[in-house]
Image 1: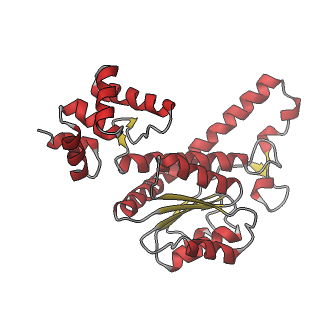
Image 2: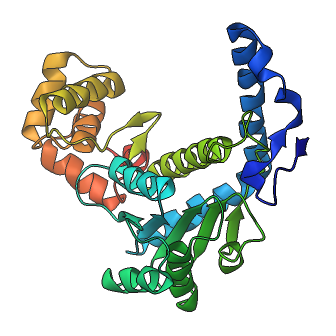
Length: 287
Protein backbone atom coordinates (compact mmCIF):
# COMPACT_ATOMS: atom_id res chain seq x y z
CA UNK A 1 0.00 0.00 0.00
CA UNK A 2 1.22 3.49 -0.76
CA UNK A 3 0.12 7.10 -0.52
CA UNK A 4 0.74 9.51 -3.41
CA UNK A 5 2.95 12.55 -2.96
CA UNK A 6 2.46 13.31 -6.64
CA UNK A 7 1.87 11.42 -9.87
CA UNK A 8 5.34 9.87 -9.98
CA UNK A 9 5.58 6.31 -8.71
CA UNK A 10 9.01 7.00 -7.21
CA UNK A 11 7.47 9.72 -5.01
CA UNK A 12 4.82 7.47 -3.47
CA UNK A 13 4.94 7.16 0.32
CA UNK A 14 5.06 3.74 1.93
CA UNK A 15 2.07 3.54 4.29
CA UNK A 16 3.80 1.06 6.61
CA UNK A 17 6.98 3.08 7.18
CA UNK A 18 5.53 6.43 8.23
CA UNK A 19 7.05 6.07 11.71
CA UNK A 20 10.48 4.84 10.58
CA UNK A 21 12.13 7.93 12.06
CA UNK A 22 10.80 7.00 15.51
CA UNK A 23 12.12 3.43 15.57
CA UNK A 24 15.26 2.12 17.20
CA UNK A 25 18.09 1.41 14.78
CA UNK A 26 17.54 -2.36 14.97
CA UNK A 27 13.78 -2.06 14.45
CA UNK A 28 14.35 0.34 11.56
CA UNK A 29 16.73 -2.12 9.88
CA UNK A 30 14.33 -5.01 10.45
CA UNK A 31 11.59 -3.00 8.74
CA UNK A 32 13.84 -2.26 5.76
CA UNK A 33 14.95 -5.89 5.57
CA UNK A 34 11.39 -7.21 5.60
CA UNK A 35 10.36 -4.73 2.93
CA UNK A 36 13.30 -5.72 0.71
CA UNK A 37 11.82 -9.22 0.42
CA UNK A 38 9.17 -7.65 -1.83
CA UNK A 39 11.86 -7.16 -4.47
CA UNK A 40 12.45 -10.85 -5.19
CA UNK A 41 8.73 -11.56 -4.91
CA UNK A 42 8.04 -8.94 -7.59
CA UNK A 43 10.43 -10.71 -9.99
CA UNK A 44 8.84 -14.17 -9.67
CA UNK A 45 5.91 -13.60 -12.10
CA UNK A 46 8.41 -12.54 -14.80
CA UNK A 47 10.60 -15.65 -14.71
CA UNK A 48 9.01 -17.06 -17.92
CA UNK A 49 9.77 -13.78 -19.73
CA UNK A 50 13.32 -13.72 -18.35
CA UNK A 51 13.76 -17.28 -19.67
CA UNK A 52 12.63 -16.07 -23.12
CA UNK A 53 15.20 -13.28 -22.97
CA UNK A 54 18.00 -15.73 -22.13
CA UNK A 55 16.95 -18.18 -24.86
CA UNK A 56 16.60 -15.43 -27.47
CA UNK A 57 19.97 -13.97 -26.52
CA UNK A 58 21.64 -17.39 -26.69
CA UNK A 59 20.12 -18.01 -30.14
CA UNK A 60 21.28 -14.56 -31.28
CA UNK A 61 24.86 -15.23 -30.17
CA UNK A 62 24.86 -18.72 -31.70
CA UNK A 63 24.01 -17.19 -35.09
CA UNK A 64 26.79 -14.62 -34.91
CA UNK A 65 24.73 -11.72 -33.58
CA UNK A 66 25.30 -9.51 -30.54
CA UNK A 67 23.37 -8.76 -27.39
CA UNK A 68 23.44 -4.98 -26.95
CA UNK A 69 22.46 -3.72 -23.48
CA UNK A 70 21.54 -0.03 -23.30
CA UNK A 71 20.69 2.36 -20.51
CA UNK A 72 21.14 5.87 -19.14
CA UNK A 73 22.50 7.06 -15.81
CA UNK A 74 22.69 4.24 -13.26
CA UNK A 75 21.06 1.91 -15.78
CA UNK A 76 23.69 2.79 -18.37
CA UNK A 77 26.49 2.07 -15.93
CA UNK A 78 24.82 -1.24 -15.08
CA UNK A 79 24.62 -2.09 -18.80
CA UNK A 80 28.33 -1.44 -19.34
CA UNK A 81 29.31 -3.35 -16.20
CA UNK A 82 27.17 -6.35 -17.15
CA UNK A 83 28.89 -6.55 -20.53
CA UNK A 84 32.35 -6.24 -18.97
CA UNK A 85 31.64 -9.01 -16.46
CA UNK A 86 29.94 -11.39 -18.90
CA UNK A 87 33.15 -12.90 -20.22
CA UNK A 88 36.86 -12.11 -20.57
CA UNK A 89 38.35 -10.84 -23.82
CA UNK A 90 36.37 -10.01 -26.92
CA UNK A 91 32.80 -11.28 -26.85
CA UNK A 92 29.43 -10.44 -28.43
CA UNK A 93 27.78 -8.75 -25.42
CA UNK A 94 27.97 -4.96 -25.69
CA UNK A 95 27.06 -2.40 -23.03
CA UNK A 96 26.11 1.16 -24.00
CA UNK A 97 25.57 4.16 -21.71
CA UNK A 98 23.78 7.34 -22.80
CA UNK A 99 26.49 9.36 -21.04
CA UNK A 100 25.94 13.07 -20.55
CA UNK A 101 23.07 13.49 -22.99
CA UNK A 102 20.25 11.03 -22.12
CA UNK A 103 17.65 13.50 -23.38
CA UNK A 104 18.57 13.09 -27.06
CA UNK A 105 16.33 10.68 -28.96
CA UNK A 106 18.30 11.21 -32.19
CA UNK A 107 21.62 10.41 -30.52
CA UNK A 108 20.16 7.12 -29.29
CA UNK A 109 19.43 6.22 -32.90
CA UNK A 110 22.79 7.50 -34.16
CA UNK A 111 24.82 5.55 -31.61
CA UNK A 112 23.09 2.29 -32.57
CA UNK A 113 23.85 3.05 -36.21
CA UNK A 114 27.48 3.80 -35.29
CA UNK A 115 28.01 0.25 -33.99
CA UNK A 116 26.22 -1.12 -37.08
CA UNK A 117 23.38 -2.66 -35.05
CA UNK A 118 21.43 -4.90 -37.42
CA UNK A 119 18.53 -7.32 -37.58
CA UNK A 120 20.78 -10.17 -36.46
CA UNK A 121 21.49 -8.43 -33.13
CA UNK A 122 19.30 -8.29 -30.02
CA UNK A 123 18.65 -5.40 -27.65
CA UNK A 124 18.11 -5.40 -23.90
CA UNK A 125 17.05 -1.97 -22.64
CA UNK A 126 17.34 -0.90 -19.00
CA UNK A 127 15.12 1.98 -17.96
CA UNK A 128 13.24 2.25 -14.69
CA UNK A 129 10.95 5.05 -15.91
CA UNK A 130 10.66 3.87 -19.51
CA UNK A 131 10.76 7.51 -20.60
CA UNK A 132 14.45 8.24 -21.29
CA UNK A 133 14.65 9.66 -24.85
CA UNK A 134 18.12 8.24 -25.64
CA UNK A 135 17.01 4.72 -24.64
CA UNK A 136 13.73 5.14 -26.50
CA UNK A 137 15.61 6.22 -29.64
CA UNK A 138 17.97 3.24 -29.45
CA UNK A 139 15.02 0.89 -28.94
CA UNK A 140 13.09 2.48 -31.79
CA UNK A 141 16.01 1.83 -34.15
CA UNK A 142 16.25 -1.82 -33.07
CA UNK A 143 12.47 -2.19 -33.37
CA UNK A 144 12.52 -0.70 -36.88
CA UNK A 145 14.92 -3.47 -37.94
CA UNK A 146 12.65 -6.18 -36.49
CA UNK A 147 15.41 -7.21 -34.09
CA UNK A 148 14.42 -8.94 -30.84
CA UNK A 149 13.94 -6.25 -28.18
CA UNK A 150 13.61 -6.83 -24.43
CA UNK A 151 13.26 -4.31 -21.63
CA UNK A 152 13.65 -4.23 -17.86
CA UNK A 153 11.50 -1.38 -16.59
CA UNK A 154 9.27 -0.24 -13.78
CA UNK A 155 6.49 0.92 -16.12
CA UNK A 156 5.03 -1.64 -18.50
CA UNK A 157 2.81 1.05 -20.04
CA UNK A 158 5.67 3.40 -20.93
CA UNK A 159 6.60 4.47 -24.45
CA UNK A 160 9.73 2.33 -24.33
CA UNK A 161 7.87 -0.79 -23.18
CA UNK A 162 5.61 -0.57 -26.22
CA UNK A 163 8.67 -1.13 -28.44
CA UNK A 164 9.69 -4.39 -26.75
CA UNK A 165 8.46 -7.91 -27.46
CA UNK A 166 9.73 -9.10 -24.06
CA UNK A 167 8.76 -6.84 -21.14
CA UNK A 168 10.06 -7.44 -17.62
CA UNK A 169 8.33 -4.95 -15.33
CA UNK A 170 8.45 -5.99 -11.65
CA UNK A 171 6.30 -3.84 -9.38
CA UNK A 172 8.52 -3.39 -6.34
CA UNK A 173 6.28 -0.90 -4.58
CA UNK A 174 7.31 2.36 -2.88
CA UNK A 175 10.67 2.73 -1.17
CA UNK A 176 10.72 2.78 2.63
CA UNK A 177 11.76 6.44 2.44
CA UNK A 178 10.23 8.58 -0.32
CA UNK A 179 12.64 10.74 -2.31
CA UNK A 180 15.33 8.20 -3.11
CA UNK A 181 15.74 7.42 -6.80
CA UNK A 182 13.78 4.18 -7.10
CA UNK A 183 16.14 2.21 -4.87
CA UNK A 184 14.04 -0.95 -4.92
CA UNK A 185 13.45 -0.79 -8.67
CA UNK A 186 17.19 -0.40 -9.25
CA UNK A 187 17.94 -3.45 -7.08
CA UNK A 188 15.34 -5.49 -8.98
CA UNK A 189 16.96 -4.42 -12.26
CA UNK A 190 20.38 -5.54 -11.01
CA UNK A 191 19.04 -8.93 -9.86
CA UNK A 192 17.32 -9.55 -13.21
CA UNK A 193 20.35 -8.43 -15.19
CA UNK A 194 22.59 -10.77 -13.18
CA UNK A 195 20.12 -13.60 -13.77
CA UNK A 196 20.15 -12.98 -17.53
CA UNK A 197 23.96 -12.73 -17.70
CA UNK A 198 24.43 -15.93 -15.69
CA UNK A 199 21.81 -17.79 -17.70
CA UNK A 200 23.37 -16.65 -20.95
CA UNK A 201 26.83 -17.76 -19.78
CA UNK A 202 25.42 -21.23 -19.06
CA UNK A 203 23.57 -21.43 -22.39
CA UNK A 204 26.65 -20.41 -24.39
CA UNK A 205 29.00 -23.00 -22.89
CA UNK A 206 30.94 -20.70 -20.59
CA UNK A 207 29.93 -22.80 -17.58
CA UNK A 208 30.55 -26.47 -16.80
CA UNK A 209 28.55 -27.88 -13.89
CA UNK A 210 28.39 -24.75 -11.72
CA UNK A 211 31.90 -23.50 -12.54
CA UNK A 212 32.96 -20.75 -14.90
CA UNK A 213 35.37 -22.32 -17.38
CA UNK A 214 36.03 -19.41 -19.76
CA UNK A 215 38.58 -17.73 -17.49
CA UNK A 216 41.65 -16.08 -19.01
CA UNK A 217 44.98 -15.95 -17.17
CA UNK A 218 45.51 -12.20 -17.63
CA UNK A 219 46.72 -11.71 -14.06
CA UNK A 220 48.23 -13.90 -11.35
CA UNK A 221 44.90 -13.87 -9.57
CA UNK A 222 43.02 -15.18 -12.61
CA UNK A 223 45.76 -17.74 -13.33
CA UNK A 224 45.25 -19.10 -9.83
CA UNK A 225 41.51 -19.26 -10.42
CA UNK A 226 42.13 -21.24 -13.59
CA UNK A 227 44.23 -23.76 -11.65
CA UNK A 228 41.56 -24.06 -8.94
CA UNK A 229 38.81 -24.63 -11.51
CA UNK A 230 40.78 -27.33 -13.36
CA UNK A 231 41.62 -29.05 -10.06
CA UNK A 232 38.01 -29.01 -8.94
CA UNK A 233 36.51 -30.08 -12.28
CA UNK A 234 39.06 -32.80 -12.95
CA UNK A 235 39.64 -33.97 -9.39
CA UNK A 236 43.38 -33.64 -9.96
CA UNK A 237 46.39 -32.26 -8.14
CA UNK A 238 47.70 -28.73 -8.55
CA UNK A 239 50.71 -29.95 -10.51
CA UNK A 240 48.52 -31.87 -12.98
CA UNK A 241 46.24 -28.83 -13.43
CA UNK A 242 49.20 -26.49 -14.03
CA UNK A 243 50.77 -28.88 -16.51
CA UNK A 244 47.52 -29.21 -18.46
CA UNK A 245 47.04 -25.43 -18.58
CA UNK A 246 50.62 -24.84 -19.72
CA UNK A 247 50.32 -27.40 -22.51
CA UNK A 248 47.18 -25.78 -23.96
CA UNK A 249 48.31 -22.15 -23.68
CA UNK A 250 46.19 -21.65 -20.55
CA UNK A 251 42.86 -22.31 -22.28
CA UNK A 252 40.78 -23.27 -19.26
CA UNK A 253 38.11 -25.34 -21.04
CA UNK A 254 40.71 -27.36 -22.89
CA UNK A 255 42.64 -28.06 -19.70
CA UNK A 256 39.47 -29.23 -17.95
CA UNK A 257 38.66 -31.61 -20.79
CA UNK A 258 42.25 -32.88 -20.86
CA UNK A 259 42.35 -33.88 -17.19
CA UNK A 260 38.87 -35.43 -17.38
CA UNK A 261 39.54 -37.53 -20.49
CA UNK A 262 43.29 -38.03 -20.80
CA UNK A 263 43.30 -36.36 -24.24
CA UNK A 264 46.23 -34.20 -25.26
CA UNK A 265 45.83 -30.47 -25.87
CA UNK A 266 45.21 -30.72 -29.62
CA UNK A 267 42.68 -33.55 -29.27
CA UNK A 268 40.82 -31.79 -26.48
CA UNK A 269 40.69 -28.47 -28.35
CA UNK A 270 39.40 -30.15 -31.53
CA UNK A 271 36.73 -32.01 -29.58
CA UNK A 272 35.60 -28.77 -27.95
CA UNK A 273 35.35 -27.03 -31.31
CA UNK A 274 33.26 -29.88 -32.67
CA UNK A 275 30.85 -29.34 -29.78
CA UNK A 276 30.68 -25.54 -29.93
CA UNK A 277 32.73 -25.15 -26.77
CA UNK A 278 30.40 -27.13 -24.48
CA UNK A 279 32.46 -29.35 -22.17
CA UNK A 280 29.54 -31.58 -21.20
CA UNK A 281 28.74 -32.37 -24.84
CA UNK A 282 32.42 -32.98 -25.59
CA UNK A 283 32.62 -35.46 -22.71
CA UNK A 284 29.82 -37.51 -24.25
CA UNK A 285 31.89 -37.95 -27.42
CA UNK A 286 35.27 -38.42 -25.78
CA UNK A 287 36.95 -41.83 -26.47
